[in-house]
Structure formats: C-alpha cells, structure tokens
Image (cartoon, rainbow, N blue to C red):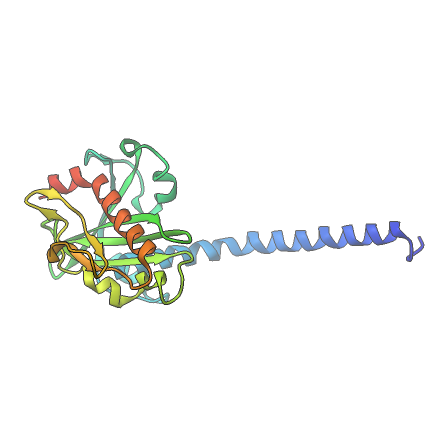
Length: 230
C-alpha cells in the first residue's frame, strides 16, 4: 500500500486510536482498585477529622477501626435500615424524596463518650460541597466539623476546607428550646444568636450560604433520629 495515500493515513490513524484507547482502558481497569482504596481512605480521614482526629493515608484505617465503634443507616423517621452506612452514596440519596433516603450515622468513642457523626452534601458556587458534622450525645452541641469541595475558588469559597473556618463550629448548638434551628453562616452585617452562628467567608458569600443550606437541609432529615437519641 502506498504510504503516501489517504487510505494508508486513515488506516494508520485509526489503528493508533484503537491501540491507545485499548491501553488506556486496560490501565483504567487495573488502576481502579487502587483508586477505590484511596477514596475509601480519604473518606475515613474526613470522618475522623470531624471529631478532631488527625489521620493520614498510612494510619487512617487503623485509627478508624479503633475509634468508629458503630455505624448504621436510618430513615427520616429515625428507624434503622439494613445496609452498610459507609457505602451509601449521598449524591444518589439526595436525588430521592426525603422519606426514601438512606441516612448514614457513624458513632465515635472519645474519652468514654459517644459522638454521632452525620454526612452532609450540598451545592457551592462552582460545584458540590460536602462534609461531616459530629454531635455530642445531647444531639445538639457540635463537637466538630469537616468540609470539602470540588471546585470552589482558592482563598474564597475553598476556605470551607480550612481548620480556621471549621473550628468555629465546635460548641455551637443546632437546637433552641427543642426546635431544630441549625447553624447560621453569617456575614458581618447579619445578626444571629452567637450560639447558633459562625462567621461567613469573606468574599465567599454564595459558598457560605450554600454550606448553611446544606447543614440545615441535611440535619432536618435526621431530626426524628436526633429526638429519639436525646
């Protein structure tokens, strides 16, 4: 075949595309178990971070196994469901009606006391935001919080993933006289009771309000469960 012909060029290019696609597919298949493991470890790190326990890729699994003493799924009525809390996909669950959602709960033992950790998922300015909120056994006082994001602006909305921002949540209350009021992420010109308020991120108003809505919406799903535990 004439190597200068259009037919040869087309066949050669097609063959290279098929070869490269096959190599990439094979690599993706072989790497997927490692990627899944890394995602699992990162999730365990984030859960531990919500109870102020630092862990890295080398010790997260060991610490998680020691500190997370129980996990289960409940529904919006506070009833326990069958299933693995760790593998619940919040993105899929939030697409369902509230009374159809599976709601994971993780119990962590700290100094002989149980902290209840619930996962959160919402929308920021540029994409999804998520996190974990840990409550004391009174089911109202926040023990710790951990948040992350997919694509918020560095120095602005991305600040939700910093310790400076997250540390504000410790000691805040989500109930007021038995009513779930959640947390207000307030700008400097906004007023709210201090016990229910944290400072918003300067220049990150949309992300701050997205995080406020995420906490309020997701905690409301657990309201029946919280009241049962009080």
